[in-house]
Length: 175
Image (cartoon, rainbow, N blue to C red):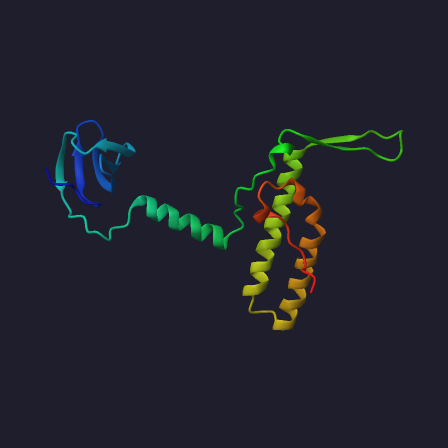
């Protein structure tokens, strides 16, 4: 039995006409006109409308998806998944006002942590936009970069919430 390459067109008795978009050791991933993406066994019954030979350098759907994710991560403000330290999971922040006549406020710590990581992510995006800007001269870029670094420094108090040290805030290093 000869393997079909990516781009081969087939007709399946159950799914209809489709195009092979990925090949694994046991399955074809086929995008069918009427049914969408389905995986079928390589030894399934189907009629080959047009076969293509699979070259070694063919890009799989997985590789395209991985590349797209990397591009989106680099050029958008899509944030990475940041884990809260285990000891804080399910916890809450209680804010008690100095005036006993006023009501205290409780907030799930996960919600607070999410807001902190969003601030960090927005600062990173701003940093990228400043560094790639053609409208700012080098001294303006340096000045704005220092403000961002100081902002990171102001947020280091929240580093205790992060599970991974590599994801924590880092301010200006002392010389």
